[in-house]
Length: 576
Ligand SMILES: Cc1ncc(Cn2c(C)c(CCOP(=O)(O)OP(=O)(O)O)sc2=O)c(N)n1
Image 1 (cartoon, rainbow, N blue to C red):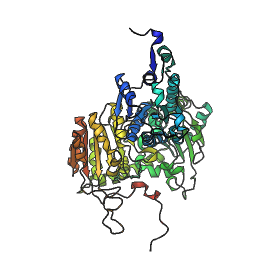
Image 2 (tube, protein in one colour; image 1 turned 30 degrees about the horizontal axis):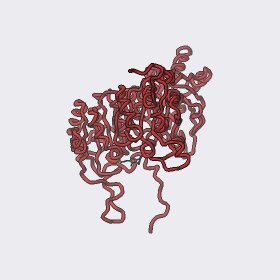
Image 3 (cartoon, rainbow, N blue to C red; image 1 turned 90 degrees about the vertical axis):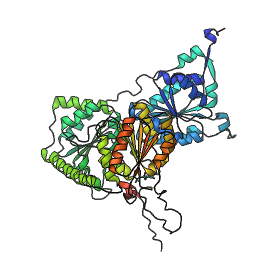
Image 4 (cartoon, helix red, strand yellow; image 1 turned 135 degrees about the vertical axis):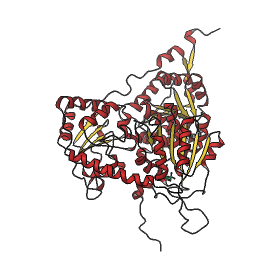
């Protein structure tokens, strides 16, 4: 006999799922266990996709990149304490990179945690998360699930996007309430990321600074990619005629072979520019903090005499490193639209051909120099000869995502492999973190439904390599390419003591990563030549099957820490 409608009950399990579905969430990335296993099963039964991982960090990385690609918060789910802590690194990375996501973790009961009475996986997760996330919330009562999820969603995507921690005590899931009241408590968030339009006077000021510049340059950051204002950003670059640079994840916003691309003349452009316009790019370590020799300054503290225009959604970002002459606090889409409108009205004279011509000259010279290195025949392959083969294959598929991490593998691929469409290059980003590879590859494959290529240094791959089983389990169209030079950075290091142990930076020689993929039913290939690499990569992409290409790279190739070796501290005490 069905219960009368008024007596019908719902509970925390169902309301968490209802709240996610009401806000168009269709995928959860996670790793089950107490207390979320049934939540995952019920979510799946109610039509959500639950992608189960082998380590929480990779699940959270997948959710983070899904957030970056869709502008909707990626959703990750972990168990309490150790599962939560495993995911926290990737949640912090999402926050640093401004990727919108929510990590929902089961947690212990407050009354036991607060008396430190030793609960199962006891940890004060809410407070442990706070320093590393944009916002952290706990829901204690079943009737608050709707508003709590709404808060988390809005916190993740509004303003500067970031990682949000949502703490769900085990008891909450079992709490029951009247079904009708439960339905009423679900909140569909209205306009979660409202436009933030800059003040008209800020628009005028910025255009004045740009119009008075003799040698302006635009720097596009991943915030510009994230904005999904691709047509307006392209129109702004082309209408102003200003040469532009792109940070690694902004590559492809305009095609890398665009006539105004200054990427191949980056050092010249940054040194010689008298005005730099930052669009969704922060002046952090990746841009030498906007000062010093990179920017034409005498020493690393010297603020070269340049004018800066900066678009950032956070007003507080301005003057972070050097004074900003024309701050534009607003979302990039609204701000670029307002700049275009003003240019329509008041016009804009393109920079003098002496400036754009000098950049083109430098670019062409550098491209010619690189072409020589790329066309060299080497055996075994080095990074550049392998990248040359990859570049030619990937050029035929501008629509697929390239995930990239490593040291030399990251730095060199960034300059060799051109991107032609926005949001296709997904890499170690702001933190230069290793371990994003398989998580990002899975998140991108699930989100886009298209083939993904993950180009990995062999050490970088090791951080998330077990997820090749996850890739096979869901039969994802991911081709993992490992540049195998037998070690962290290079493979030729020796134990300084002369002892039998391997040097801290080397791995087993001749390792066969391809067999790892075969172990789970995927396709594994070893490539010793550019031809073998091209063939395997073309077939991997076309097959849509999980594929791993173990690329044999000269162990003497590359430099320690790639292009950031200068960040290593030097020992002052020389051992006798
Ligand atoms: C989480 C984490 N651990 C360690 C590092 C340090 N690190 C490490 C360990 C790298 C791997 C370099 O080795 P690789 O084999 O992946 O790269 P190449 O062979 O391309 O140089 S790059 C780098 O900055 C890091 N960035 N992030």
